[in-house]
Image 1 (cartoon, rainbow, N blue to C red):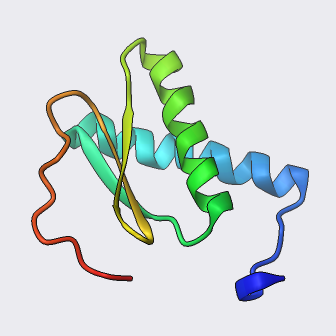
Image 2 (cartoon, rainbow, N blue to C red; image 1 turned 60 degrees about the vertical axis):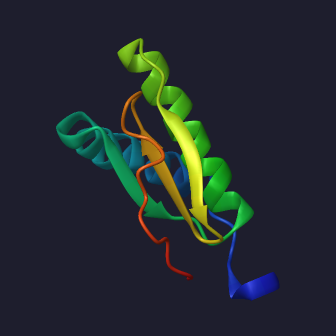
Image 3 (cartoon, helix red, strand yellow; image 1 turned 135 degrees about the horizontal axis):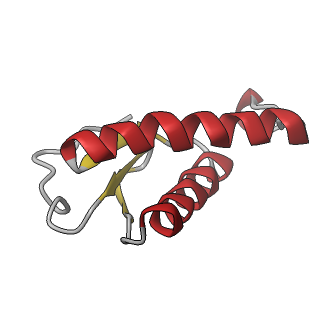
Amino acid sequence: MEGGSTALTDDEERRMRAMLFSELGNEIADRGWVRFPAYSPEDRRRLIDVAHRLSSHWGQQVFVEAEDQCRLKLHLAGYGAQSANPTSC
C-alpha cells in the first residue's frame, strides 16, 4: 500500500469515526473550530464525513477547509479563514 498505511476494518472505521465525532465535536463546541491531521485521502474523507454528521446532529453547518497538504480545519460559521501562516506537514 502507498505510504505504508493500512485500511481499517469496518468495525475499526466505525469506532474511529465515533471517536472523532465525540472528540472533534467537543472541541468545536468549546471554541468553534478544530484542526486535525489528514495525511491520506481516507483521512480527509473521514473528517468530511464527521463534519457532515456533526452538521446533521447540531442542525448547523460544520465547514471543512484544507489548511495545507496534511491538515484540515473543521469550523462553525464565523470561525473560518483565520489560519495565520499554515505550515507544511
